[in-house]
Length: 184
Image (cartoon, rainbow, N blue to C red; front, side, top):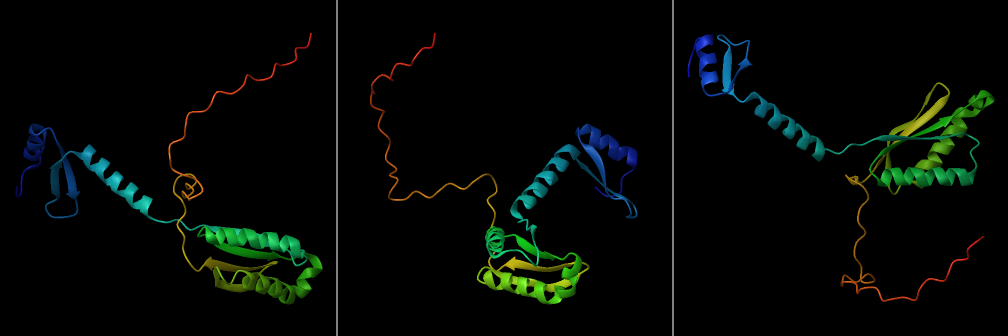
């Protein structure tokens, strides 16, 4: 439309039952547009929502162990780490030291983290090498393959040959249920 007076632009917008929206306020002269601002906000929010839906969120889960954690408990923690990695999350493995354990932290902590990394080497890679921070030693592992998390609820199990897809017949009439004992 070219350069138009502000009052004239407002009149044109009202005549079309639309809004006058300032698009570029720093330009000389400022650039305005006649549009339905409510519809514009709705469309932009829908675009942002669609963009958020398509992105994957990777969380960092944390597993804590101690230098004296027994083998069975360590195996349980390894199962949890493996499950987190298969879901597509990163895992921060933390070894916590207390008291005199700090004297042997470099040796025992590295051994535990090395054992954990070797046990999950088939599904993970080390993203952050083991390092000591205060009384804790930590390493971050990430999955080698990224698996998308299911977006809503649990996934449906696949139909196999053992579960036929044929319609089920109506239930047959059964005998009456046994009489219940009445207490008096």
